[in-house]
Structure formats: structure tokens, C-alpha cells
Amino acid sequence: MSARADDLDGAGPLVEISALNKSFGTNHVLRGIDFAVNTGDVVCIIGPSGSGKSTLLRCVNLLERPDSGTIRVGGSEVTDLDCDLDSARRTIGMVFQQFNLFPHMTATRNCTVAQVSVLGRKPAEARQIAVDNLIRVGLADKVDDYPSRLSGGQQQRVAIARALSMDPQVMLFDEPTSALDPELVGDVLTVMRRLAEDGMTMLVVTHEMAFAREVADRVAFMDGGVIVEEGSPQEIIGAPREERTRTFLRRVLDPTHVQPS
Amino acid sequence: MSTTGAAARRHLSPRKRARRIRFVQYAVLVLVVVLAATLANWKQIGDVFFRPSMIRTTLSQGVGHALLNTVIYTAGAFVFGLVVGTVLALMRLSEVLPYRWLATAYIEFFRGLPAIVVFLVFSLLPLAFTNFSIPFDPYGTVWLALGMVGSAYIAETIRAGILGVPRGQTEAARSLGMPPGLAMRKVVLPQAFRIVLPPLTNELILMIKDSSLVYIVGVASNQYELTKFGRELSNSNANVTPLVVAGFFYLLITLPLTVVVRRMERAAARSR
Image 1 (cartoon, each protein chain N blue to C red):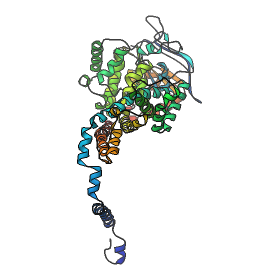
Image 2 (image 1 turned 180 degrees about the vertical axis):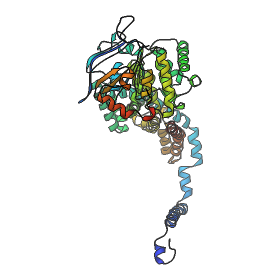
Image 3 (image 1 turned 60 degrees about the horizontal axis):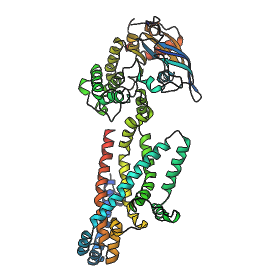
Image 4 (image 1 turned 90 degrees about the horizontal axis):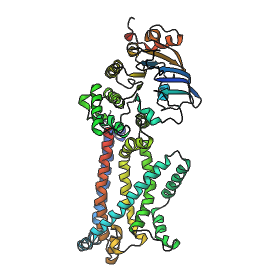
């Protein structure tokens, strides 16, 4: 799956970030980020909290507007002030740490509302796509349930189905399992793993090192608003070059998660 | 705990002290009831407040019509207040500074005035604008006056409701490609509406009661609402019974609403 530098259509990376800067007041959160994600790649961003990884992700679909630098997604420059953000966002799926399902809509309606109102799909067609995606995330029996009746893991899978229903080119995951009870994390990660196997381009901010090691094509370690190093999971998690990465991994890698490599 | 000696009797156990305090409370209650029963002239009270013939007169002389008028005055004003209040709430949340100023000024102005002053001004409006009249007079005048005062309160309620919807909801909607207006309509407002339903019903109850101010604008007898209707009958018969009946009809509308609000609040607390 790892289609790194060899872009088949020669159009360049699907997501291309260059010289990105973002401050919140005096807090310089992103300090000149250069970063790219190729079509079909799964890239995990790891790093300590406050390192700017969530902000980086939220800049990609312009939930945060960067102060300087450019971001291109699928050929359109989303940081351009004249860019039609709403149409750009249709191609970028976003999954939040807190799920952010619409509580006044059933699982299916969560997945159809934007299909109908934004993409202009017929309700019947939208419903079919929604149900297909809910089946895909393993919630065939929950299609008509309201979010309040679902567990955290189920809610997050509905959120993934909701994003998938828009046929995105790329999926962004912002710590998708951090708000979940430990026993529910596995279901969500399984869905994400299957998504990766199906060839979805994914940018994942996560603390799940096992997931990053097994699923990611590339891992980037962020600290203090910069990407300290990036490479294959073996390079970054297995044999990090930078001391900062080593310190972080030592702290994060619970002995029970360490597997002999 | 020791149970012997004078010291022990002065320092009662907490349980005994609580029992004694409760006894005193009941004793006071019984005393008041007994005094009221013996000292008050119940025959006269019954005659003035609950005279059966007056009850019959009130019921037969159009209390139903007055009730209908109260409902019409209130419903129109509430619809007006809801529409204007929603617009004001959106203005207060607008990114355009003058909109925020205008809405804030309007809200503070009308919240700071007694409703009766607004009614008086509207009833005297023809003095300033000759040949000008508010359509559907007096209904239009009442809807406007009551609605304008109500909209100031409703605007703040709705604003709080919109702000009560988590930011992540808007972010999720925008991430799906919804433009701001669509995200507001499909995602934020329906949830805000649920939040504001109980306080909004309270506004409605306040408005029902404020509709009693209609007499200020001067209305014909077939436009009387409950209070004016009851007062006219009371005055002409020198008996309070018609007003008591009118009050009963207010409770007929407001009490069920209060029960509904309490249910909604409990349901909202459960779903959280």
C-alpha cells in the first residue's frame, strides 16, 4: 500500500502542507510545518499533548485558519481566501475525539443529512449509502437508534460512517479513541484498520502506538510545534533517531504494549 | 448519650430536638387555621368572593369569549415575540458590530421598561402620527406592545440556547461541507430549541398574565380579555366573584403549561 514518492498520476501528494504557522495569542502552536500525505497512505501523527498535532489536523480542513503557509488538498489550495471551503470540506472526512454526532438525529439521519442538503442526493439514495456505511462499521442493528442510546465506541463508528457517506478523498482522525472506555477502543481501531486496508487515505492523530505501528505507512513525531522526525513505523517507533522521540515513546509505551520487533 | 440529670434535659438529643421543632411548626399551623376559622366572617367572604348567582352570571355573560380574547392577544404577541426575538438573538451573535449594538440596545431598553409604559405609549401613538393606525386595532396594538416587550426576553433566552449547543456540533456540520446558515438551521437551532423550550414556555405564561394590561389601550366590550371582563362585572355588581372566576380561567391555561414545563425539564435532566 505504501505508495510513497511514486505518485501514479503524477499530480503530487493528496495533502500538501508547506511552511504552516499558527499561533493562539502568544502561543506559537505550529512553527513552519512541511508535510505531505500521498493518496492511499495512512499517516499517524504522534507526540505529547500540546505539541500541535490536533491543531495541524484541524488546519487541514480549516477548522483553524493558519496564520501563514499553504495547504493543498486534492489540488485545491484550501488556505486561499477565495477557496470555496464548503466544497473543499466535502472531500475531507473528519472524525472528532468527542464524536460530535448530532444528538437529535438517528444514526442513519446523521449520515444522510449532509448527503441530501450538501451533495444534493435523493433521500432514498442517501439512506442506502448511509445504511451501507453503518453496516461497514458493524452497526447494522443500530441504524435507527439515537446517539444517546449508543455506547461511545458505537457513536464513534457512526461518526466514521457519517464521514464516509460523503465519499471523502481523505479522512482526518483527531484522537478518535481518546474519549473511549478502554474496552471500546478495539472496535473503533478495527474499523479504522479495515478502512486502511480498503485503501482510504488517512491522517490520524493518535496515542495508540500499536495501531500506528501496525497500520501506518508513515509516522510523524511532533513536539513543540514542529515535526521532529518522520518515517516508517519501524524507524520512528522501533528505532527513533531523536532523543525527544525516544523520551516520548519511553513514557507512552506501556510495557504491556511493547512487542518484540 | 446520658439520659439522666438536668443537663441532659437541656441538651436534648438531635432526634428529640428535631421532633420538638416539628411539633412547634404544626402547632403554629393549627393555631392559624383555628383563628381564621373562628374570627373570619365566612358567610360574608363566601358572598363576596364566591356568590353562586354571580358565578352563573359571569359564566353566562361571555367569560368564554374573554378567555378566547386572552388567548388571541397572547398567541399573536408570542408569535411576534418569537420571530423578533430569534432575529435579535442572531443579531446579538452576529459578527457585524452594529447589529450587536442595535440588538443589545433594543433588549436592554425593553427589558428595563414596565410593560404598562409600553402599552401606554402605543395607545397614545395616534397623538404623534395623525392618520396613523396600527392594523387590526386593538389586536395589532396589543400584539405589538406585548410582543416587543416579550421579544427582548425571548431574545436572551434563545441566545443562551444557541450558545448552549456545543461548538463541536457546528464544527461537525461545517466539516461535512454545510455552509454556516445550513449548519445553523439543521444542527444548531433544533438543539437550541430543545434547550429553550422550558424557559420559552415560562415566557409564554408571563405573557398570558401580561395580556391583562390590555385595558390600557382602551378596548370595546367584545374585545375584553379575562381581567378586564372580570373587573367590569365586579365593578358593576360590587362583588369580587367575577374576578375570582376570571382568575380561575387564567389558572386553567397556566397550570397545565407549568406542568408541561416541569415534565420537559425533568425529561431534559434525564437525557443528560
